[in-house]
Image (cartoon, rainbow, N blue to C red; front, top):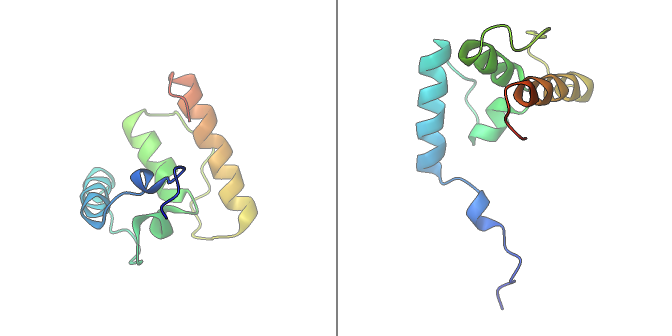
Length: 92
């Protein structure tokens, strides 16, 4: 029996992930790390911070560009993305 509370509709298809990956790479002019899904490539937040700064210059006050998946780096970049999005009127 299928649950009434399924959130499968929130999970992007592989085709949608590919489209998003191509767009992000074209905006940033970089190659994202190879991973089984887009989330894994973006989970440390570094490329998302770069993307936010590319779309809205100076929206991220400090961006840690070292490639690390340490929890504190990911948390710090997540907090910066939320603050920048909030300043532009986006709700995350």
